[in-house]
Image (cartoon, rainbow, N blue to C red; front, side, top):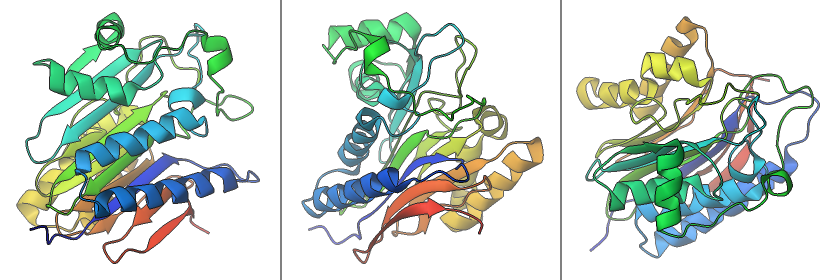
Length: 291
């Protein structure tokens, strides 16, 4: 019999711009948090919930992920994603993937249909084609870049979701189009297990921000290790990881949910877009900022 609290956090990316309304994103995130609540209350697995929510974020065109991704300097769309099951630590990821609607669906296929954790480039495309995942037939018309007007090379909309289900299972998923105007072949932290995405029996984590710094600090894995070995709360551990990111010169945000329903969504960027389903059933959504 299920007796565990349910909880979920999703993010629409770290970094917000002054004098720009994020009302559509906030409304969308709030709606998705409501969908996640219904799914979790019906007993659906955390892994299925995070995949479903990230897919909805991908196809919305509101974030720098999926449909909202921007092209690299060769005018090609290379996308990354990862998903991880905290109970088994099984994980799947795709990197520099082109031509498919949902990188997170492809990441799940890597996890469940191959002996590998990550497939990149044409290998990821080949797997997606094998399982008949939905293709992007015309990138020029499909993608609606959610980029800032002057295309500054910052990530403003990586998406992610972490969840705890009623059986105590944790899962995490992250998807991104990467930094704007990135070099072809660039892979950020998002698909790297332990850097941008992590889940175990203690916590589920998804990161957003300047990926290179999250890679160099092993942000998600570091936070998870501090929870496991130092018995810190998810918030304490994620804040420490962000301080290390900052020490290296980067910024961003981290969302996390612990096995007891503890919620964390700290950030050290200009802001972060997120929504939260608390164990008591409350839902909040908004653009977090330092004002």
